Length: 278
Image 1 (cartoon, rainbow, N blue to C red):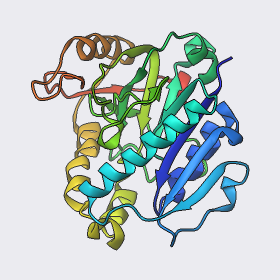
Image 2: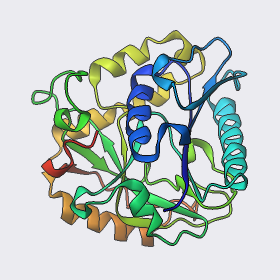
Image 3: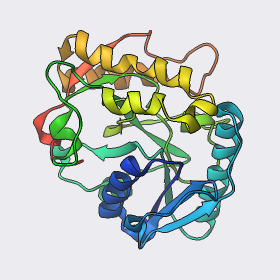
Image 4: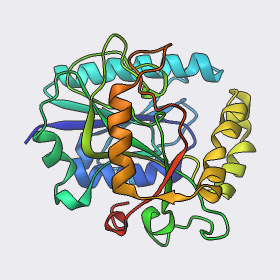
């Protein structure tokens, strides 16, 4: 079995980080999780016990400069972990979860150990929304995937999150500089950052995020809820298969190492087989 680490950087994000530690800790073991808190004013929560969690000097004061600095730092940390003996490093935000399709009956380490990865591996991105009128506010009483069933299949979250050798991630882990990407079958990156209207509205009011310039970004991404609510839900297996082929073959003219999908807006309903994973 390959030795795999997962790393992330957070600021004021205990809600997602708790789930991140719970999920990746169960998959990889808590001692293989590396969590960096952006700012010495942060607090390391008790649920991070057993992980490698540490405070770091705050990186930047505006979203653009901060994001570049954050990914440079995490790229350097991933390179160091690979040099220390890890076979793979997973780099994701705290609201992102790389999931193997349950139909395979494999854990994440089992799946990745069976893949030949030269530089990086991407999971197909699923950006979860909230179907207003059908799905209520998110709660801690049940797993996420029993409360949310609709996601946009797009290119934004098909990220080269899994690396096998030192490289430099672009902002948001969206690309690796100087390298192509390879989308794995039956592997998904599930993004939950905009899957609850109430939680998103609270983020809009967060003075720290607004001060860093995140307001326009969050407003733009809030459309995921509108898509989940208004667009027809398509068959998961058929349309994720189409998306993998399309994103593997198509590139935007401004970035050959990012996937493209003709600006198609495709919403799928997540099969019940996923409901106990997260």
